[in-house]
Each structure stands twice: as C-alpha cells, then as structure tokens.
Image (tube, rainbow, N blue to C red; front, side, top):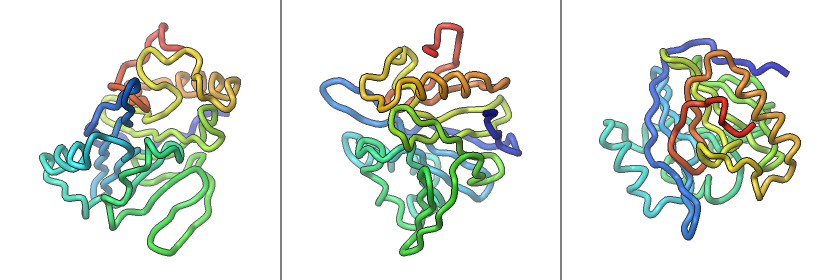
Length: 196
C-alpha cells in the first residue's frame, strides 16, 4: 500500500528533546508548526516537564497554544506528559479525543493539517502510527519503526516483526523522505544502511 503524503510542504519542525534508552528511557519529542496548527508528537517520558516546555517556550509557543498532540503508540514513555497541553486534540491510531468527545476515524491518510498526515505503521505495537510532515526540504517521518539511527535491526519489543519490516520498507519508499525522527534518538537521514 502506497503512503498518502501531506498535501502541502511548508511545515516547520523542531525536536524539543532527543530521546534515549538504557538505564533510563525518554521519548523523542517533536514540535511542528503548520500555519496556525501547533503539534506535539510523543510528549512522553523526559527527565522533567521543563525538558519539553523550556524549548517550546524559547520558540515563543506557550503550552496552551498547542492545538494537536499525536501519539505514535500508547506506551507511557510516549504519552506521559500529554496533560501539559490542555487545549489540544489528541490523535492515536483510531480516534481524535478532545475534552469528553471521542471521534472515531482511521489513521491511514488522515490529514491533521495540510502539511501533516498519519500512516498506520504496526510492528512495535499493533496500533503504531507514523506522522508524516511536508517541509520545504522534503518529507519528515516521526515514527517508532526505528528507535534510533542504528535501529535496532530487530525491535526486541515488536509485537509483529514481519509488519515492522514491511512498514519500514513502505516508509523508506517515500521518494523525497528527507529525515526520520525516531522514537528514542536524534533525527537522521535515511541511507542504504538504515535497517529495513
């Protein structure tokens, strides 16, 4: 199945926090601005809330201005700080949540904004989604298909390794894929050595 790409290519992206795994675990937290839409991807575990809010404030964006939060999946290390954004709509693999409203929808191809859409990418969990962002430089993918630039080649926590490898290949087939922002590491440009 071909990936549905964002319709526009003007979004701005900043990684607020580079995640890691080891003795401690933290998610990579990303901010996306698409016009009046302000998005946070994976506001999960970090050393303290200011590790997210501090860099966001330096961009001149208060937490209350965030319109949307996207969860790559529902593990706590990717969701724990969601409540920092009280005015946001929350997106996952099958719905949008805001206040007491639950709006069911499929994630595949869903446009959060003109420059941001979702792709269903199961593997790590059955419910994983990838956020695809259209920028002037190309497509950026926020995804847990990779933990970091080096993979791991085989995700030790994957619920479906075959699906993980299939979805990695599908994302890597995007012609103008410029950057991958992995679940627990710094952004990287995909190469022939990127684990498939």
